[in-house]
Amino acid sequence: METKLLRIDEKNIDESLVREAGDVIRAGGLVAFPTETVYGLGGDALNARSSEKIYRAKGRPSDNPLIVHIADMEALPAIVREIPESAARLAECFWPGPLTMILYKSDIVPRETTGGLDTVAVRMPVHPVARELIRAAGGYVAAPSANRSGRPSPTLAKYVIEDLDGRIDLIVDGGDVEIGLESTIVDLTAARPVILRPGYITRRMLEEVLGDVAEDSTMMRDDSGQAPKAPGMKYRHYAPRGELTIVDGTEESVIEYINSRIALHRSENKKTGVIGTDASVARYHADVCRSAGDRRDEDTIARELYRILREFDDENVEVIYAESFDTDGIGQAIMNRLLKAAGHRVIHIG
Image (cartoon, rainbow, N blue to C red; front, side, top):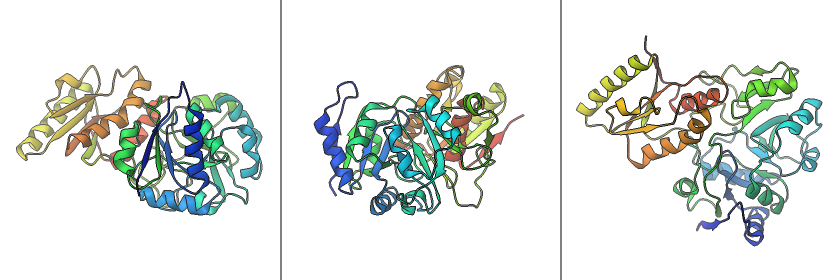
């Protein structure tokens, strides 16, 4: 399959190009496109064959649910059994935006889209190209991240090309994404709302709207053996090709430990990389050192994380060490992705 590339400027959207991309999805094809979080791989959410194509293109396990993207609130009633008050309140506050809600699905949503579940994950992105494409495609686009399964999610079109060229019909290049981490996922099918995946919309923000909100026990520890109710809950995700280890401790102890490991790996002729911060990165002796930004600026760290992991792959880094980050606010989402990328390999230094 030859993959076509279209460039669409979000500040000057060419409607003819959007219609072209929408027609591909309507015809059962796959289109990668930008959202404010990461690039998504879109297919017709109401077409079981399209969802099956998404799983094949990504090499994704078919029990890993897809997120249905809508562009307007009027589209929601058709794909869910009911809209609980909690969902309406969250939509009023956070849609369009980086929040996915789990609700009971209606009969028109095929189980191929939901990973065999009776629930459906729904999101309304804020990115103007994404919303126009969803409308052009018929209003319901199933779209996981546009990468091969397990790899870091793409924040640039070039990484979509790297992973999916020849496997999908079309890639829409809309430039850099804004946030850089996938949406927060909250399950609204239980009596108490539960965060299944942390993201830019934090627990504190959700609790300001809903009151008490729980967190799934697997968010910050190894996966359970149960079927995932939402993307990112099971399997290794977001991983670079090199072996990634997170090191947690005081700044001095972390730097000393990582540099000692780098010396060992250098004796083994292994190329090394480190993810540090503006304050620490110059003190590491790795072959490739990258700063995720200032620790006080979590938005920047979130936006830089996947790009850094991809750059390590570009430079054939074999062994990677990352500093740990605080888990307040969006820092929780940053650590969730790092833990998944590292396969929960963490070294705690006194």
